[in-house]
Image (cartoon, rainbow, N blue to C red; front, side, top):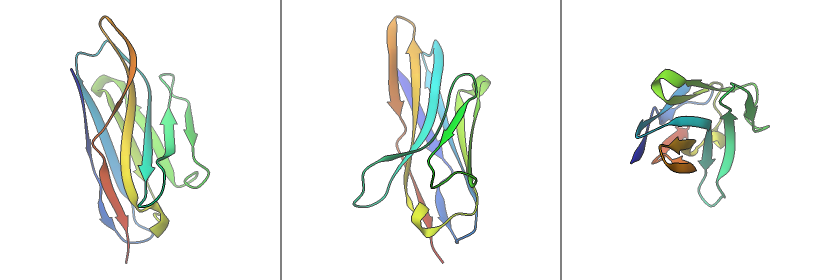
Length: 120
């Protein structure tokens, strides 16, 4: 059994900052890529940022320079630091983590989602 628990969403004014966290727990052998997605009302889910096991990162063009993804391998946790937030960043944010379990192949697990609302 694997569980992902997200935290850190909320309401923030334009220009503000938030930090999202996503912690994985359970029977985990190893963790590969970790990432963040978001889904705004009426839109498809889109990738925001991801980070490989080696620490390489990728960002959507819309967040590059404002968001930073990082990971703490000792805590099985991925973070998303969001600065200079804009109203168009409003969405439900989901983490996705690729996890290898003891005798099972690598699979993607999703967090429950956390609402981020940017509004004055």
